[in-house]
Length: 137
Image (cartoon, rainbow, N blue to C red; front, side, top):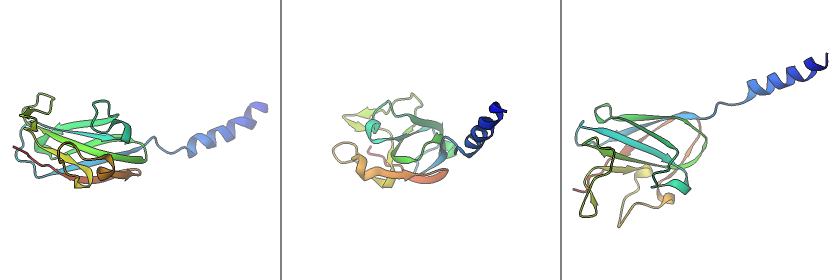
């Protein structure tokens, strides 16, 4: 009988627990070609523009969208780049990006990446946003 007393409330707590996070679909506008991959990162302030960003994904550029799964609710900045040659790196020529870049809220680069606050969005559950890819060369 003692076992049953705590089993029912414990099961109710498990059933009431929300899913870990939502899936975020990032659609990419203004791709100059369907070549290579689009790489997307959804980052909290601490890892914005850093390689340690915890929520990342990639898809063929011809698809025009990337889905990042299980992103917990919170405030993030989304960044994407068009890896046209598929080498996994953002290529540069003379310090300028040779491949396209895009940020949430259409935050623009000026003498470097935008500030987190310029690109910050609130993620709550499943959602979708569109980034505009910009090319600097």
